Image (cartoon, rainbow, N blue to C red):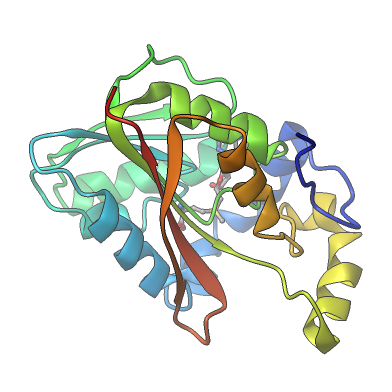
Length: 221
Ligand SMILES: C[S@@+](CC[C@H](N)C(=O)[O-])C[C@H]1O[C@@H](n2cnc3c(N)ncnc32)[C@H](O)[C@@H]1O
């Protein structure tokens, strides 16, 4: 099966991501804390596993960390040191004792053994990573059988003026550090190619259905 790709996008690589988020880090919370809050709340609710281990990939400044059930043992990874520095500060000031580690790591090449986590959660990350399908492969590898991958991201408009704006922005993906145009088919095609992964929920989120919660279950055996 051929997988869907992101249309009209200029390629993003890890160096683009690091450069973009070094720029975003000082103003990230101010810019994105409120508008993307409903997605983080929904992702944390779906991925919380009291007593279990959850991996937050692309944890950024850690805005979602206080939203998990406090008995969930969290590990966060991110490519961007300036973003992670803010997450570490948050863990300290809010005394988030359930956060077991915040590590610089590539979401597409995780240094964890197979089946380490009860869930992997990625709020607002799949449209940012250079290779979404390779990332999903890796996240599926580290989830235990019976576990879940929980995603929140913007799914691109398919028609209308918003689609035109997103296509224009898409040609500037590398500079922005994310793909504004991101068809759901990227996720759906990946799931279709995985015999042990099933879509269990796809739900539009506030504000205005701009973001989508996607839950993917890994078969128990
Ligand atoms: C839009 S931010 C989301 C941060 C956080 N999850 C939130 O909800 O605010 C995307 C994050 O993904 C990280 N990221 C992008 N590509 C990555 C990769 N290949 N490996 C690890 N982190 C990556 C970026 O550095 C950035 O911190």
